[in-house]
Length: 290
Image (cartoon, rainbow, N blue to C red; front, side, top):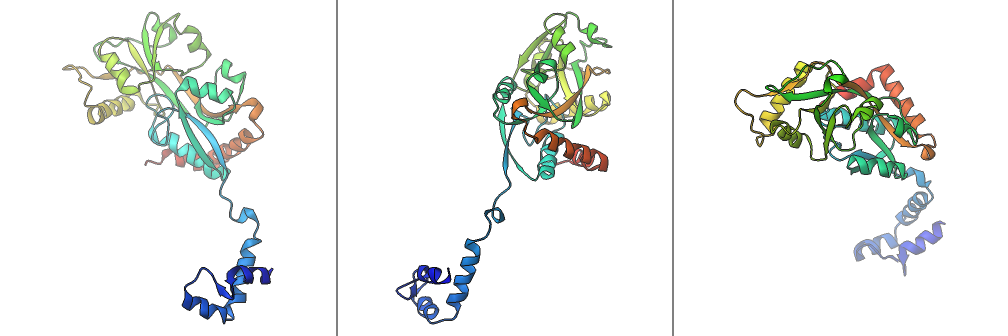
């Protein structure tokens, strides 16, 4: 092996990829056998010694990338931190692909990869395997301050029009009552678009997800966000956005994969989640700000 490398390094007695001075020196130097031995060692190293971490395709809803979270308005850090936490726990890299919700579900059921940011319902559970819940979002209702209404349960939405992200699901009961007890206007244009529709009386309330369980804090944060980041929204004098004090529901957020493609990945993710919850590292990761 050493002789073969020497012939490769030295063409006509001279190393072909060095300058003439170095070629002259190396051709007469004891360093040639040493260099050959080094190259021989490198050439027979196991491939795994140089391999990069394996990539796993991860599907997320459009807007739910490293800067955003599942649904409309969940804390930006939680979504990103979860992905990074599970990456480290599995010792893999995620190749993130972003789609609108309806296309994400379609591609997930076609076997394109793993997904994150999903909640459970009966339809999805027929074809998908879900991980343990990573965290929970509170599903809040936002109204205009001059057009608010009392809310204590689903029946209080009778005859109301709600704005929500296209393709989202908030459990079986919500899906059953949608467009029967109340109507929904779905779009994929984001929070600002729905807030403008709310201001223009095109809907009675919009659905807004957040990990914070305190509606007053969510309300203050939302109005501050509108003031600082959404100058296009023109609130009438004396009007602000109100978060109704009782959440519509609590929505657990999961990883999921097509059942027939689950060859142990959900079990491994569950191990990372459970360990992270027990030792407190998951809660610590979720609370970290950018």
